[in-house]
Length: 491
Image (tube, rainbow, N blue to C red; front, side, top):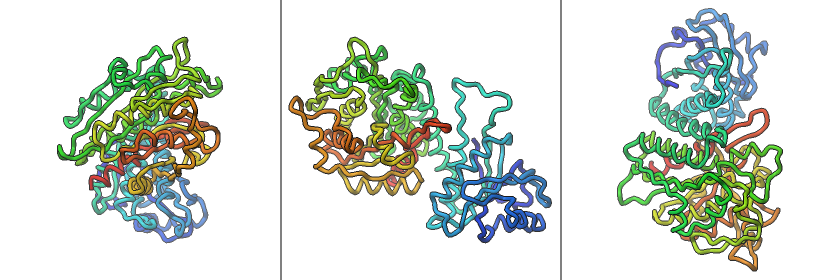
């Protein structure tokens, strides 16, 4: 989608659709006042008669307004002005984007960001509006060709001029590229998006930027490194594992990099601990952690951030066959620590622990992993927040703040020593599951045992990176959180 700025007066804008915002029983924004005056009070009368729904995230399309050069007007409802927070603004912007995507129009002109929102300025409102419009414009087409009467994504959005407007649009576009890449990778079927495919996607990213290099380790190379935990998960699959390592050099040579690690289980049957057949198709989304870090890496490169970044993706399938690893097996990780496997469906932590150990060679400034790791995190936090665990309070605070700033939020969970006892076993240094209580936390505790030398944080995105039901699909998260963290760190 092409984004641009314009200072053309609202009444003179020739566009298929003007976009403004209105609160419930609140004062009109400057653009709404201008529109109301130009239409001889039509807008005000429709607001008063409730023909326009001003509840949060509701949209109303108006036709036939006089005094305007525009064909129609989309009004975004923002709810009560005293309750208008950044989170509600974000919801409303996504709703507006969806309404525009689902309409036959392909262009719009937006004035909505002149509405006052608690604790944020117009630059942020413009950036978030532009980001949400692009995120909502996503339409999956790889294996389903659009019909003639299907939704038509927007091709162009013009925004009314604002302070720092171009930098806001540039940042939104850079973040949106990552969101859309992550969504597309997540939604792809597993017969297409396998470990080799993820490696091909990484190659395309590397070939697109001079500052990016790629290395892909094959199973033989991983075996030489002692990655038996990762390779144990891969043993049952006909598709070989890949360890994908992307490096972005935007900072000084002497600057230690941030390292992202993303769980790339491209399909998860549960292995020998086979999952129920119902809804197993959704396990194509078990690589959304990988999709998220690849998307954030792409955003970083697109924004040309002055920072060094490494992205590590262990890409594996978890399948059952005669050579698959079993409950009761003891695996030796790259770190030398041994792991008793009680459940082969707790495989994500097994591939991540070797990837986290591999990350040590880069002398990382911070290591952040993202993974659709536990259903327990979905039970705890639903689809709204990612679970955050960390051994570094400063890093955890920076990630929470970044998530709040871009509305890709996380909630910190404890990894206290008391939880560690649930991983004890007489047969190895640890077992790979800690039982039903605090399942998300004990998974984080497991990973923490491989990151004691590092400033580390873990994002459990099982609930936030994809949704099921009527709105099933990848969300692109945590691209926003991770990219905002890098923007803040680079600044």
